[in-house]
Length: 376
Ligand code: GDP
Ligand code: ZN
Image (cartoon, rainbow, N blue to C red; front, side):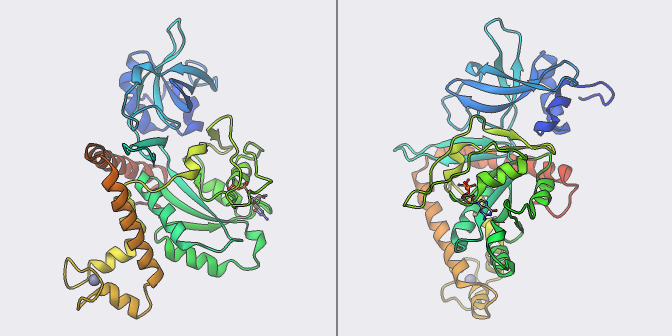
């Protein structure tokens, strides 16, 4: 365990999101003479890991290129990925090596389109999944709900950010709509152009690990630059005719924020889809789930049953038809993805999800002082 008076090498990693829970998770590795590090990029068997530069944490950090052979696994869900906390051996003459990965708190997974449906981990240990939505484009609430479900599924806390506020005279209604599509989620408005809302957002993300999700052109790169206080991400100047925009690549996938914490921006994350989102869907549509719990019949399909609380809410206008349709669509889509996924992996993911949500809960309470961001 960490001794409060003795400086630890891990102190230098606080800027990258290291905390006291990690100190205890790392204790056994420290005894073996390994140093803690955070994976900032993975590249075919090697990864860049940021490690403390000095033995007492006073020397800042340095990035080393490390071998990952020791933690190699054929399971794509378990390979090292950006955001992982690693136990690094700096002593081998052949160069640094990752000896172990610490248990993940959250995981962003992309389903691959290969025949054998398998997931691919895109980012680990993400605290906030920031969903960027341009306020200047027509608000697609169905898409927003999909991203919110994905965020809940990963174990991260969703945050919705309506971008480009300078382009609309009044954002009140849009803000209300977005809030109704994302119950229990912090929804805010920013403009990277004027800087409005950026400092408040930076404050909310300080010390934590965040990812920015959302459609191409939503303003993620511009917002990332505004949060970082420098031009790191290349903003797209040219849009493709299909509106998808160009993909800009970055040299590093994990970018430290001036106020502590990091933003993870891997190219793959930007096109992330839905993956076995059972748990996340239930949370994203907690309002409907609450209603369903009040239906007279436990197996109510909310189509024509007497005493159906969902139909009653549709009737009195407290639940929008659009939102129920969106929930049904995502449930169907999810069932389809699940049917392509092999059962072993599903069981594995569910087990991990349970562990993650327990760890995540502890973390939020610790980091956020048990305030309004409590997840469950
Ligand atoms: P990304 O694809 O989500 O990373 O989006 P970009 O950051 O590349 O931005 C897409 C376009 O929106 C660019 O032309 C930006 O200049 C523009 N943009 C981004 N943020 C703002 C903003 O706050 N206000 C205005 N007016 N334009 C913005
Ligand atoms: Zn019902």
